Image: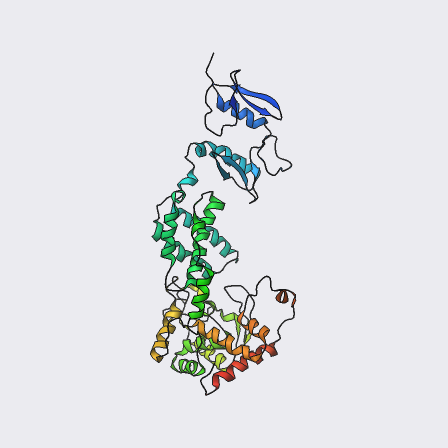
Length: 427
């Protein structure tokens, strides 16, 4: 009597029956699929006619015996050697992909399990650039991800196999992500870094222990915020900045305190979003896409006219419509997470004036506008000017559809303008 063979691999769905054939009990009946000496043919026959007991969701129109099941993430999946593998959202493409890759997966030759750090970063950034092309994310977001990608490469090395990463690798990465002393910035970088490995898990079927890379605890962030410096300028300090600034920086500073512009607003501000004759800008926040409209002071209009008139020739024709360019003709967008030309040049100005303080930079003009503007007692108008994104669970914001008219916007900016002109040092 012949000895029963072992299964070709642990997940082989048939068992060797004493009759000399590979068999499977289906719906209470024993079904035979071929002789022991040809397990591949038996498997093919089984796949062609089986009812898979594994599906978690049945989809009408699929052939009988379709071997994959629909995962809640929308992809067709199969559990192989103890792991769930995903093969795409189209059932026909998924089946072909499964049949083509099944043997490599079983044998441990799955190309996805050989994914390197540099390849993961390339694939992730390619996906993000598609979102940039469809205007779902901003240039600044791409820059932030690129900077974090560089840190990941430095911490883990470009050639390291992603599937072989262990908890210690993520501990090393977490330490590298801490630049400076702000737990808020640290938390943001960890979130972006986790996005790379979440993409590997959900889109490339490569799992890692990235979820163990935790953000700073909320109490740590709160304590830091309480100890933080007061990120405000006095009116005298801002007047000194304007007096010291050159043509371009004068316009930038006015936009900071008149319209609550931040660094990225200045770096990306298009000329056609400013109506100097009417004295308004209509430039939505690049960060959130929220619409903004703000009256411009006469001083701001004059400074912008001078800046645009003296604007250097752009090195890149794509920047022809930008209000602000560096003397070299390059735009003012940040080079990296730690190299922002607007921040650097503004710090130089503050140091020349002797008013530099760590943690206080150009964005503090925005903080100052909000703080002073709030005294005008029209929160909605202030939020309309700064482009504040309200929480999704803010019911008042959800149902309050009344627009803020120009007269209310003008009242707020005029209040801040009067504050700026006062002689006393107050905020």
